[in-house]
Image (cartoon, rainbow, N blue to C red; front, top):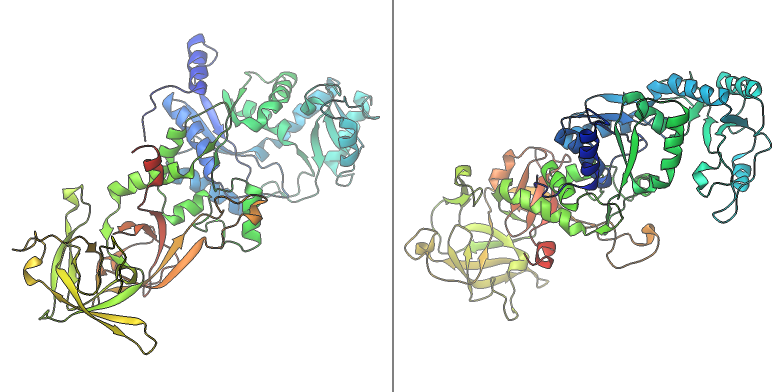
Length: 549
């Protein structure tokens, strides 16, 4: 992970709090609602909350904010915990907001006793109508002046299940004329006759997020509740709940800019729509910006943590170029991903003057790491090259193979195209070439200069594989709703690719650089007879070039 040269504003706050004695230990939390899979935006929050706790010798909890049984699922809970640990963080504790339901109920009763909460019979639509606008104050509910005794009785009856969904709510009694709409008697509890994934049917009333969140923080002793900027307007309500529910010591909320990234869908709701409508194969589709999708595609936790470090922590929203994330992935994989040769669209080459049963040439596994050693790659009379590496009538500056031209085969020999074989439809099926026996890498004429070097695979030992080339889900320049911006070419499948034999031993999740192609990862769809490889990221780094690198 890149070392941060300057502390961010949250670190400055923490250091001041430690210095002045407001806190003695830093306790943070990552509090996702388990209603979907985490995406790259959540990775920023994970790295910030866990990383901050680690830096200051504190603790960070993973807490599921599971207060809405209608949208939550055990599948999401399992995926979230897996993602956090995959990113390299170990929670101090794995907690559930639902474990505090009794505590929250007691705090709601306290507000009723203090005359600061009331049961309201207005419908959701009526509550919106009464709330007012940004320029006009709201008006009081006709139920706002119910007595403490009546509110206590009605709230207990709500808990006992005597009312239907939406029939009553519990609201805070604050100020219907407040310039902050969140303070205009917000709803604290609603009725939901739904089975909860942990508490079953024990409860039929559930706390709203703005009530549950500060109480969860207080219960766990959170010192710094770090949220994204959309919760900035909710902070006065957060503080109101903490103060009037008499939570000591009091946690404090701080907001930072959420991650927005070019050509990337960052809405959990929209991502769920892609899954539900079958636009993608699932939450872990390698085109998805979910952490599970990035993991399956082959992104590494080291690269994601590096990316989150580089973008920093800001107080205002901005959009990050997705190229920076890809740059971080390339930098890491460039150091750790072994090199292999794979031909995506094979064209057969017969070397007519080659005699014998074949031989082995040596290829580097990691060019910058001698300890990674070399591997033996079989070479024989028949090989395959990329179809795009040959042209019958090449344009200027085409330095690959053409009739009468020479190229070097990576770590092997120089070959020359002598003739072209076609089928009855005029399609090229085979090239007939000759080779220079002394031009083998390390041989007597190895220094002879040719302009092109091609990767290749041996026909006899190559293994068939499927290669999936991924692009962004969103088009770059289009506008409008995300569904109108979907890229129809976000997936291209190369079903007839051929790989060098060394890839036969690859395990699912293993990552490689396919020479001249990009970085690839073995996919779980692989079978023993037919491995599948996903494009992680191409070799071209447009972001680095745009930064003058």
